[in-house]
Image (cartoon, rainbow, N blue to C red; front, side):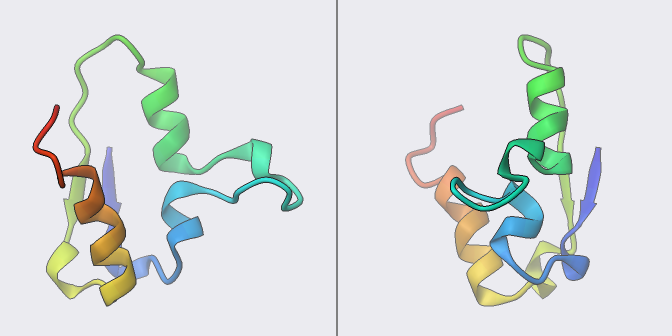
Length: 69
């Protein structure tokens, strides 16, 4: 899966809505991809992450904060 980060304007576009927002259970393309491939090895390429908005960059870096895979 390739996610073009330059098209993402809000964290919810990448990670999906949070409860209690309407349609939060729908998820996001990234979350749905990861859930569908749970237990399998998968590569997610975050394309052009260096050109993303600062809040999007921070949200993505939190994943790698502890260096745990």
